[in-house]
Length: 284
Image (cartoon, rainbow, N blue to C red):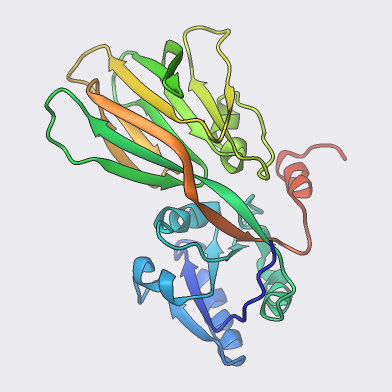
């Protein structure tokens, strides 16, 4: 996907916990301002108010900073350039020393954008529980896992209205292809190329050792129900490790592909498989 419209206003999200992040931000702001492009700072303006106003977002931090931004992009998608202040990330591909070369290409219109799939998770309650419906958006994954000292949890998975499986374990991960290299991979799931629109359902520590991940079409809808050993105990649903809500035996969780897309500005210096080899130290 090629973006041809001129960039007139840039939003910047900075992770202040990263070393040198503020110095990089101030140098970046001055560099952009010299090109008569407005800069909006997320430290001064809430992200929700900033998103409708900008043509490009720059994230200074790591993949976690990008995931935080993705969760806020409910109503409008803006191209995002991820700059890693630290080690190389899957989403923050651009290093600080490469930033200005990449921006020169971006501001001259010589850049491409990848459309990354997002998930929508809706939590409803049955059995007379009077809590409002909760909705989350995730770029990597939706995770439902046991909380605290819960002894075990039964997880029922329905796909397209049909029972797919039921197992005992610590929980379940529903990941996007982007998230297939994150928690899902650590739990034994496959790596799926981000150009695909699949859903990856990966059990967390299932008691049945033969149980493996399911890779489903992105057109499918997944329904998750849990049963804790003690009805007073709860599990936790998290979206990209950023937002969470307690769920229990009365919860119904529906996960599906979002109508939104996360627009990721591609690095001109590295590819998906190059990053994969570097991150996992794979042979060429």
